[in-house]
Length: 248
Ligand code: SF4
Image 1 (tube, rainbow, N blue to C red):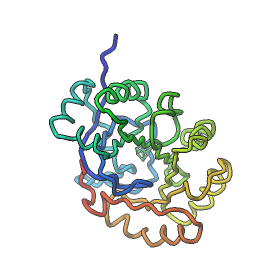
Image 2 (spheres, protein in one colour):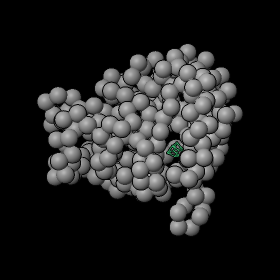
Image 3 (spheres, rainbow, N blue to C red):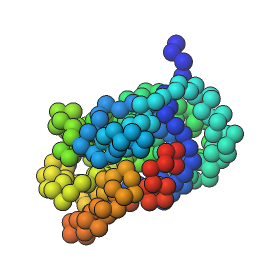
């Protein structure tokens, strides 16, 4: 039988920086690899200036296999498991964490044997892969972040309508869109809000930008779009606080 392991890019304790639970203390478990590239985003590699687009690509391209036991041991040693038991969130992110969803489900089943009350778990996803039934029932919050035309991805890759409908049908799924300009709003309304029949209370707009400078230039524009359209505003708190440092 294949070893019980996850391919992990990084894990660290911080705060949830984005979306519906922004500000909540959280253990971030970033899993390696993504099925998209998002070349339309603006992020440049800090050392070389190379255009990467996605601001976490440098991290999720790296991955190391961790056995389930070694992950739990590290969390215990750092007292992170106690924090989760005390109500901090576990945020499973990427890359695209659902690429490893069968292992994620097995890992959560093991984790649940280590806590007397269920740990609050969020999964961040680009909404191109349907979560299995176990995850649909167990995950407390899906942060669904479909990629728009401005991501630079082809519609064939980024817009998976059956999967989007599955997420829309889950009451614990909230939708977060990365906004580069006011042109993005028409697409959000047409292709998502209307097609998926989403209440505005389930929609967050977040300014694009992997650095403080890039993001700040869009803050006001995105806030005004939220006010105008009754959407929620999402900060990127980790960038406000730590700019582009990784592992924060
Ligand atoms: S889907 Fe997310 S993690 Fe993947 S390339 Fe796009 S922005 Fe990066």
